[in-house]
Structures are given as C-alpha cells and as structure tokens.
Length: 361
Image 1: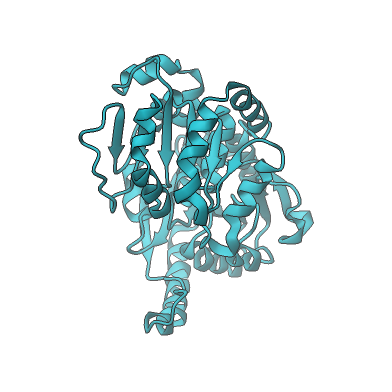
Image 2: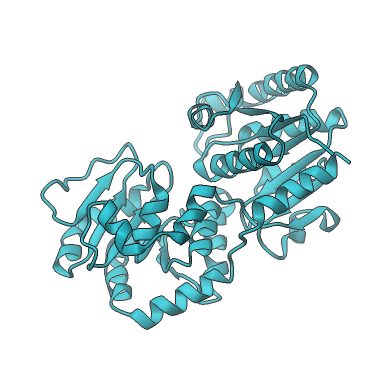
C-alpha cells in the first residue's frame, strides 16, 4: 500500500508543532514520494517553524477565544466560519488520503471540514486531559491516538489507540550521547552538575523570575545552569560563571544529554522527551493551560514517584532550593530516573503512522 497525500493540521505551541513535524518526518521516511501539506493558524508559531522543518504550510484566519472580554472575541465565530470554508477549498483542491489533527485552533476547522467530505481523519491527543476541541472532534474522526490510559472519559472508547506521543528523532539520539562530553561541547565543566531549565518554546515567566531571583544559589552550591528563557525575557547573567541563558536552545539533544536535572513546564511533549531519556525532573505546571491539563500530566508522573512537582504559585520560594536539594540526593535522582523511564514510549511514531496507514486500506 502507499500514501500519496496527507494533510496535518494544528499548532499554536511547540507542544503541538513538534509532534506534527515528527509525524511528517516519519511519513516521509516510510513514503519518500508522499505529498504532505500542513495547515496552521495565521500569525501563530507554526507558520515559521513548519517551513523551517522543510514542509509547506497554509494559514487559516482562525483564532481562539480570549479569557478576558475583548472585541476580538466577537470576531471568533466569523473567523471560524471563514476558516472552515477555506479548509474545505484546500481539501477539495489537494485531495488528501488522510487528515491528521494534532491540536490547536486550526485543527478544529480542518478536521471538521474533512469529516463533512468523508475523508478519513485521525486525532493525536498529547495530553492526559483532552481539550474541548478534540472532545468535540472525537465524534467526527475515525481514530484517536493517545499517550495516557483512561482516556475513555473524554473520547469514544472504540476509537482510542494508545500509541504514545511522538518524539523528534534528534531528541531520541540524546540517549546515546555521553553526559560529560555534552557538557564540554556546550562549554561547561564536565565534572560539575548541570541544571537545564526549559519553560517551553515561548519561555515561562514564573520559572524565569524564580531562577533570576535565586541565581546566586546555583554558583554557591557549585551547580551549573543552562537556561532557555524564551525571546521575551532578558536576564542579567553575563557575569555569572557556569551559567548560560539563551532565548532558544536549538541543539536540545546535547542540552538534554548534558543535564543532570531538568526543570520544565509539564507539557505533554516535554514529558515524553524526559521519559524517553530518563531525566530526573521538577515540573512546574502552567496553571492557565486549558482545563489545567499540565497539572494532570505532571500528577500522572508524581503519583508514580517519577517526578517532583512545584506549584506555579510556590516556584519563587521553593523551585531553586528543591532543585539543589535533588542534585545532592543521588539515590532520589536514580529512583526518579528509573521510574520516569517506565512512561517512555519509544515506538510512538511508528505506532501512529501504522494507524494512519490503516485508515487508507
């Protein structure tokens, strides 16, 4: 069998975009002649990241509802209708074999449009708590790929396939890298512990402020720090030895390999990467995430003693001290590392593509 044309839709955050690109790359690997079209939301980060990954993308004028009262909320229904009409036109012209949704505003319009044309559709739900869009779409799609147990409370049970979340191939390669060599490559002392701080692709204000406020604690305890701040945060770190603060870390494989401990938000993609690599971690869930799904993601690990958690509201007073205490507790590091590996799903990409292939038979 062969796949000729596939549409992948979604975005808004790295947590949606990176799995989408990983699925696209696996499809290209298995079907070199395949034609893949991404559909995203105009003005969102997928419009930059997807072309950078080598795929073509079309943007829809769709936008989500703001939590505060704004005039732009009045335009949401009109943008949704316009996006569905544009999606129908794209689908009619492109004639895909399958349409895949990974979450985000655009996927709602695209999968709805595809379902009205009886085109096979698949959702890849990354989180342990499904968002409203995917819950609504679940009635219209054929297959729902998930990473967590007990998702029948959100989706029709007969459509659910547990595949795991896709992880970029370069991240998977980090497991093969030597930690000391990775530290040297990044310009750090190979003999001192290193904390990696990642607040997601956009950075994380609370985590950034907590690190900045307690920055001296790292050097005082002979700890090194590799800190992804996001573009909007500019820390005063130039005089600190053993500290690197970057808006964005492009070589995440080496960063992960070098890290003895990771501080992160609790997005599904980050958790999948940490699980695959067996990294001891402290998770700081984003409280404003839809349906507080990041707390649900984190607690799935915490309840199995596979990660530590710090509430966003307590990060300023607890985060850095908890990180340094963990670095000094080798037995707990080993326990967290062993337990989080049990959540790893290394075959997720192949599993998802297998489900995509089944839809075209």
